[in-house]
Length: 291
Length: 71
Image (cartoon, rainbow over the protein chains, first blue to last red):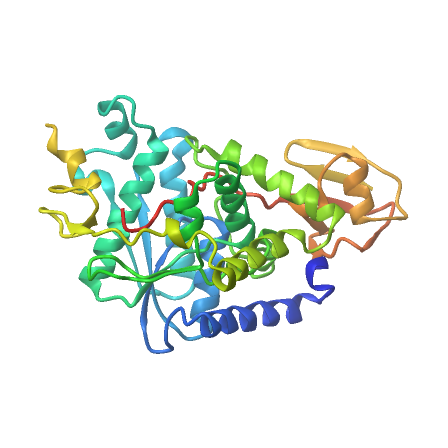
């Protein structure tokens, strides 16, 4: 890990990785040792690696896999299999699968087709957030954790900066607190790790994961930004880390974007109770309205 | 040595570091992990003529841009 000027053998790397995850959880007060944590698991390397680490640390963690019903390249089926396989190999660790098609009668691509002009990606994001909030609330979980790593956060920061999305720049963070009972606390325990290092952990722990990207993925743009940031990193070791962590620090200490962090009055959706800025129904419930 | 990445394969002479080999074939060292003869190695590892190397891409995509989580 050049960004840390540190090279470790496999065993010590795995130890280091687990230890540092715990440190991050504590330092950023993501959740307390006894808290019940809901972990969003996609079947990809980061979420499975995080599941592995949280279990090793003895946290009370339950996996949540959201099956979106994407049939292209058997994507949803393969993703789900990776999750089920991981859970089985660990010896029946708790997890649940939320099947969109089974619950709502249609898959996410189906809904996108019906709602002409609505891209699968934006629908997917909307649905996953709603479902995570719902499951966390109904299950009494203290927080929802995701496997986002530093490369992910830096790429999003880069994108937000290129477009000067000041609203997002004000809010983007490794910990998103809950300021409403139906809004789950969101945490990213891997946010300080480079993607290459979370991948190394998954490989060393011999965790099988889904390699292919979602067939609908807008991944081309994010991947492009990640590649650009990697070019920067090649010239200037630690640049990605510096970019993201210094941003967080500057925002905190110098009050950047404070004016853009409108703590707007959030109402409650009439149907599901989740917070919404518009009156009446939230964006998710509105999906089902026009029928 | 043989270096494989996705469905491509290259043949290189040994005696260079993994990082140098990766750059030589036009890939980004930060974007791959190096599996030499079945084991993960650091990118400063010196590769030999007889080595079988497989590179694994680590970059994942498809993250939607940050959306305020209350909306």
